[in-house]
Length: 594
Image (cartoon, rainbow, N blue to C red):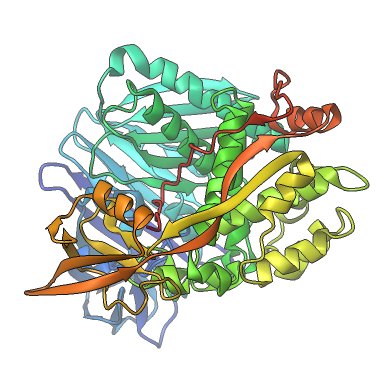
């Protein structure tokens, strides 16, 4: 049904798998007379905070009036088109969209010759028009279709969405695919595999069962599911670097060996936990700027540390509570996230709130990023840990579980979302000092107190010094340099991002050799290729402070607190027991400072 203005957009989407294209016909009703009609593809989608070029794939665009008159169409801006000559009422638009780029698949779907994932980013919309959207999916003969929740089904292939935003939030799978279905708490969970990896026939059910353990852990935080049906959409294609949330599902890329490699299977379950948590946190509980988002100009908020950082924190905690990850490994990750950040100059300069506001600039790492921005996922995770620790050790103990659930219940249904002030007031009510902690750690730079939180919980933190030259190598292996710390001992060496290390003290580059030289020398001579030039530089090596070890030194009461927190009643740490600091997982990549 149209909204009060009479506006409604009807699409007919025809999938042409062998050509890897979509033929799209759209009819817009309720178009006002007068001004040109503006059409656009989105320039971004929530969860992928960067201005994209989706309109580059739209071509053969034509528009006609209600009476069949050809209308003038011209490109207008990054992702827009202008239709001139319409007299109001109805306008019909047809175009073709190229739809095969697996790297962009999580953002705008793709059309393979055997299957398709269809997303609304491929469909033009009228930003000023509003109203519901109706889509008729025309599929090749013999293709089946899976539609997630969030839409009203009109017939077998036709669905109505309350808004264009809801259409963008609904990945539709069609063609040949495998499904494993599970139920939990009255909701249905479909695990959809558009292709297969090693060991699929024998291992896929165990994988789905492991994912469901994290699902149950997530439900325990909020008490119920905010949906009736949820779809995990997986691909084993190595170029499908997927990992994007939707209100009723998610798209996730898996390594081809994810089902047969225990470490990769655990990593996959962790990504599933992260994306599922988003069904509550960001898909329904939204910062003001995302309620609703502006899909053309972008939306900017200081609260992505909540949307993404708290979600990252729970991706680890949910796995511990599900029995898939040892509690020691979660604690190790917390420490290593802190160590990882504390080594960066930007950590002492950039508040996480500012990093969040700048997300369209800093969502991906770049030369110089280590000096001028931090990842709000990473810092937000540590803020969440500090909040949970402060709440659990306060005079009136509570937990982030309880406080965040109440925050969700209060603001998830709010049409305006929540503000930073709402965060300060709601979380600050959890106890003395929590509000000050929030202001310090979110609005300040380098202010997270993970070490103090660990000590208050019963851990003994060993501090020491490590040798460093102040550079980061590409993929932490080199030989290419990706960043040079501008506060590091080699800041004035002349070495720059992009330089390719060739010789170390006159001998061929090896990572082991570089590590040894940094550990044992005060200066290291390096020869590097810079474009077409060969340059020689001298690295300077100094000491920097670091966390070097962690042991449990708590009381029985503190241990019981950790058991309750981790959901692991079998925890039996002894006084003086070392907690290995070897576990460190970050799907955004780890920047090791050498």
